[in-house]
Length: 303
Image (cartoon, rainbow, N blue to C red):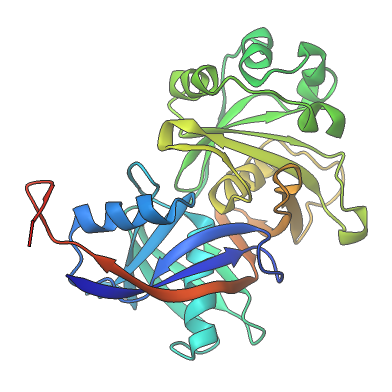
């Protein structure tokens, strides 16, 4: 059995034990897929990033939830590069990352904040009965009133597709009692990985927050993801597509999330045409080693 350095890194926050925790294995070369899945299951955070050598970019990453591999994860990308910068393994500046959805550009600032450029957005309105969404999310159908007239339910993706649903007030967002089986079925019905619900009625007005969001991804083994980079990117593209702001589109937005899970975090979002970037801070909260058994045909090899 071998041991691998393994980190827990809190993304989209400057404070430990806030934001969204990601597992990070800085040198995953030599790990099998079964071992990566076992590590992600053991860490039991929403995603774990495994960094590997790449012939196409500065490094390659594979992302695993506790139950399966996923193509892209924003907070684990921010967490990984924040940890590498903290280690002195990378400098501030431009980097590239090979993912399952292509090679992405990563920018690290002098303060250690990480910005990732996501894929070109895909956004389109979907035919959805608000009564069905209300039943799945456990909220009053009236929550979709008013705001839904200008901002319809839609599919949006910048690498991982989400069903985007705006609601009118924070009390509706905070009071949701989702039926996760129904939420998974709702997402599946629109070929989405999860459901992202938001309101412009934000908590952190002192943080100049643009909106407050909640992300539910039960189909990928994550009932509610505390602070979500991929969903934030998708929502930023959605706001641009449907001209959510009467005046000039903001150069930078701040999406808050995680407050109702006691893990508040803030995602920076920039949208410029077909370019969507999400970014934020990260802090290492745990640094240790994990001993991993060997596997053969999905079974642990006995000593």
